Structures are given as structure tokens and as C-alpha cells.
Image (tube, rainbow, N blue to C red; front, side):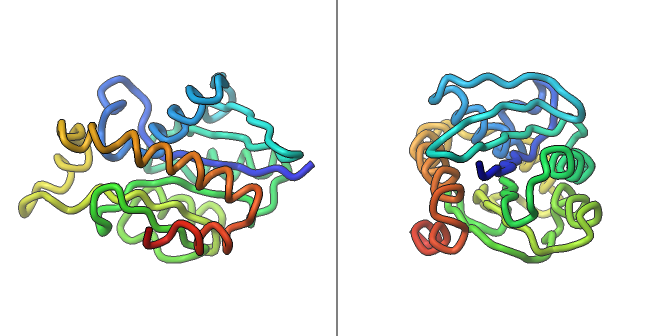
Length: 188
């Protein structure tokens, strides 16, 4: 049975739960709610398992806080013996318009501390990312407040459609592979 590690990046704690920076957690929570699967607190994070057509998806929400996400990712990849090409990291991206999605197989951390730590712990920048656009609609010096701010009413209305698409992307990643998934969803 093929295994996949799907990691949603975010920060633990109620004060972060509705922030833009926690879109990785939000995507996994939405998927779990739709498929009636539950997360359990385990070593370095909350874990849920989902099975689909002979594949096992292990969902991870690290409890290490965003800036130390790589530690949890490396631990679960190793523990579950999941190859690096079966890893998908879901993260927010300031450089993409709100709700747009970009899948990549490698790249820089782009100033994102969660990706930077992941790259450091995995010792490579060649891992699959699912970047969820949160836009850059903030004034000079307001980046931290914006990223850790909550979604606007308009964004919240449009978010469910994007979360539905996120479920399709995760399933496609496991069933069709990263290249087919990129071709199907990037730029759409």
C-alpha cells in the first residue's frame, strides 16, 4: 500500500486558528470534517489517517509551531517510511493572489520560516509544496499583522470553494501523482 504524508503548516492555539498563516491546518481540518476522520495528538503533532483506493494518506498538523515544522515532518516521514516524493506540504503564500493555488516540486523557502525549517531538516529543497495564496494586501511594515490576522468576511465567503478544490488536489496527488496534479490544478 502506498503511503503519503500530507502536512498542513500552522500554529497551534486558539488565537491562531482563524489566521491566514494557518491555512495548512484549515485545509486538513476541512478535509477531515468532510470525510469524517479525526485527528489524534501524537508525537510532534496531530495525526489523522485516510485511505483511498489502496493508498494511505497520513495527515500531519505539527504542534512544533510554524518555525520548527521540519522536525515533525522529518520524524513522521522516517517513522512511517514514506519516501520524500510522497510528501506534500500545504502552506500560505503572500506572493499569490488570495485563493490561488500553486503546486511545486521544489523551490526556495521564499521567506517562509516553516518552509525554511523543513528545507533545513530534510536537507533539500526538492519536496512537493501546495502553496495557497493569501495575497499581499498589507501596508509597509504590516506583514506579520496581516499573516497572523484573520480572514476578511469576503475571504471567508470564498474560502469554502477553495477548500473543496484543496480536497481534490490532495486526492489527485496520491492517485495521479504530482506532475498530473500540477497540470490539472496550477493556473486554474
